[in-house]
Amino acid sequence: MTMRTSLVAAACLAAWLTGVPAQIHLLDETDRAACRAWFVALADAQFYRPTPDVTDCAGLVRHALREALRAHTPEWRRQWAIPGMPSYPDVRQPPPARGGAWPLFRVGGDQYAEFADAATIIRYNARLAGRSLAAAHPGDLLFYHQATGAEPDHLMVFVGPSAFDPSARDWIVYHTGPDGGRPGEMRKVRAADLARHPSPRWRPVEGNPVFVGIFRLVFL
Image: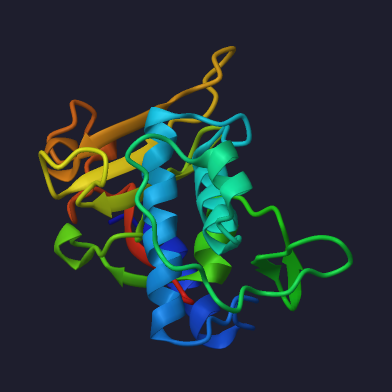
């Protein structure tokens, strides 16, 4: 890990340890399990049924969390569900709206917003779980940081066993984000295959200085 990447990881961890917590305070383990299950299924579902609100890696996280916390009514299912979508209990006490908005993410200080980019999600709304994929639980985020480039930060969602594809138990999903004039796309890959990615910078291994680590949303 380079000095710069080490500092990024340290800043993320320090912000979690000393800063104002995220807005979301789930009632108990039952609600945490429900939120986690919906979050994973909804992130996974984007690979099969992309929606226009997901245009980059952070958008995938925002979409999956926002929809995980909603009431999953028949109308919601008509709009969002796809064949094979599992069903879970709803979160009984989702966080309150503020001024007509649903500011789910801490964005700095005691400020909260509906929008948060990849770095903000990690720095203010997640905690470091480790740098080995062995530490990953379903719903955890893989965070990459590059010192250069227009989009230096990147997130992937660890799915683990997939409700839509039982052929493996180590699935990861992510949105590539826009690239030049191309809008990018959703991708789904096994962790074992990602560890052998042709481009070493995308390998989630401890020897990769771009891979900061596995992060867990603080309320999960």
